[in-house]
Amino acid sequence: MSQVALGPGEDGDAGSVAVLNAAGTELAIIDKAGAVANVSGGSASIKVMDSAAFDTKYADLLAGLPTPPRTFVLYFKENSIEPTEESQALMAEIFAEIKKRAGADLEITGHTDTVGPEDVNDAFSLRRAAEVTSYLFSQGLDKTIVRIAGRGERELREQTPDDTPSAINRRVEVIVR
Amino acid sequence: MRVIGTGAVLAIALAQPAWADIGRIKLASGTASIERDGKLLPLKPGFVIETGDTLVTGARGKAGVTFIDNTRLSAGPGTRMTFRSFDYNDTTQKGRFVSFLRKGAVAIISGRIARNDPQAMRVETPKNIYVIRRARVVLNVK
Image 1: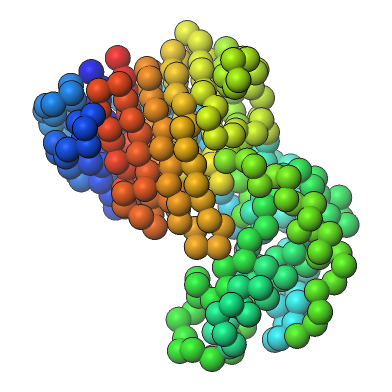
Image 2 (image 1 turned 180 degrees about the vertical axis):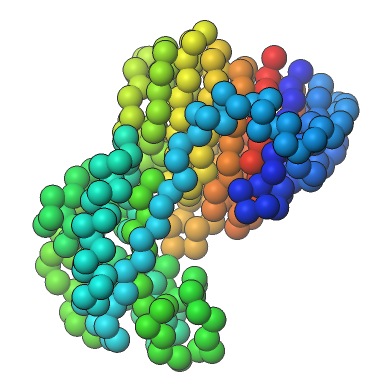
C-alpha cells in the first residue's frame, strides 16, 4: 500500500506523476495540485483535496526540504576568460552564501554565446568555469565541494541566432546548494 | 581565445574527486544514517551520498538531501529509501534517477533530470512505481 500526493508546484505548475503497477503498466496519472492517489498493486483510487491543504497536511515533511539552490551569474569580457569588474565583486557574496548553508556544495557551470562551433564552445565554457573555480580556490574555497561543468551554447539567457555575440550569454553560473 | 591557464587545469583536476557524489545531506536530526556496504554511517550536513546508498531514519529521525541535479528530498521518521541508480550528464543535464522507497514518507521536489526527460525519474515501492514529472510530491509507503 502506498500513496502519492501532488502539491502546487514551486513555479505554479503542478506537473504530474504517473502511477504504474510493478510490471510497469500505467494505472493513472495525477496532474492537479491537491490530488492524492491511494495505490495498491493493480489499482489506484484518486481524490482531490484543496491544493492549500497539501502544505498544511505535510508541513513537517516539507519543512525538512533543503533550501532551494541559489544561482550567482558572473559575466565575461568578449572572447575572454576574464570576468567583468562587477562580476569580480560578486565573488565575496558567493562565499557569504556558502557560509549560510550547512553542508553547502557548489556547481560552477560555464556558458558561451552562439559564436563559433558547438564543440569549441563546450570546451571554452568549461575553461571559463575552471578559471572561476581556480580563482575561488585561491580565495580559500573548499576543494571538496565543487563540481565543474561546461554547457556550451545550450542554455542561452538571451535567445539569439547562431554566430551572434552576446554579453548576457557569455557567463559562468555559480550555483550554491 | 587564451590558452587555458595552469590554474584552471589544476581546478578541473582538483574538482574531479567530488564527481562521485550524487548529492549531499543538508539537514539531519534524530537517528538518521546511510547504510553502505553493510555499515550504518551517521549523518551530518555535508555528508556525501553515493549511488547504492540507503537512507535510513529512526522513529524520530529526519534527513534532507539536495542532489547534484537540484532534486531536493526530505525523509520523515521511519523511512528506508535506496538510491538505486543515478546517471547524470553535467553538460546536457539529462540522466536517470531510480530510487526504491521500502517504507516511510518522503517529500520530493524534482530537479533537472525530471525536467529534461519526463520518464527519467522513478521512485519504486514494493508494489508500485511512480514516475515523477517535474513535480512537488509526497510519497508514503505503509
